[in-house]
Image (cartoon, rainbow, N blue to C red; front, side):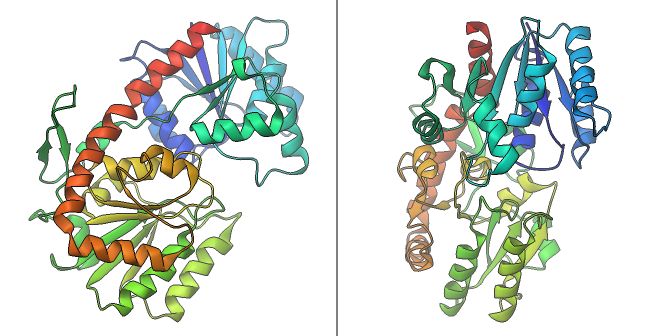
Length: 391
């Protein structure tokens, strides 16, 4: 069967990262597909070089023309399944496939908390008219089923997948992890207990090897809660800990207040010697592998690709007790979970880490094995193939 993956823009984000990994692995996993996108973005070149044919819909404000162009692509490529990543694209696909046997699938990557007006109307309409809806966590699927009273038979859970090869390429001095319960080959992960001799990222920041290097990854938007981390950093600084923290993620034009609030807070509390706002980076694997610990805070993530990637490199991870984070860490078995929006509890947990570094590192090794088995891009694609075949 032939699949068309529909995307909006090709800017850097969780959805785009996932689809890029899917595109790069479709041929090796026996999946016949193309990509169709509406807007360009910083990842356009990488999508075009992914090994999959990608088509950009010509820009037009006429929705009818856009639908007709999409239909032409469907028919030209003998598409059997159109897999959209946004409600608007699943609506376009449904209209473009009228009179054909093309099945429409929608993956819901977020919640509907910010949806209103036309966008909410489109969601309510299309979510009941797809052949299947995919959710990236069980907690998210339960939310939509309960709110919209959906047909359970058409709702499916498919966890996001990570291409761990790109993380391993970022390791300067790999170590080998083995586990008696692991059916896979040995797993490489960065070591917390020793800092590699070559640290290009530390060199960039002009940090000594003694300084704790901490960080978080994610654009500044309504989904994440970097402000709680900022408040924690103020408390950590008051403890006279030698640390440096990096925020990897861009200031989003439509929601600049989330970045500005964090930036201003760090400025007012004289934290800029200890905190760096890096913006968007294309070397996240290298950065993760040089961190001593990863700290994350969310308001309503549906999965948390950055959290899983941090777990996969074998560094201690701290995350708040939002439902999906409990889900992917098995209620804190594979990460340290702190109370949501409670910077004091995060500080307490972090100070325990400083006092018991070896114990936390052993937990991080187990976490690396766990997520690499459960959340691989290969598993993700095989689950998609199974769903496609069932339609």
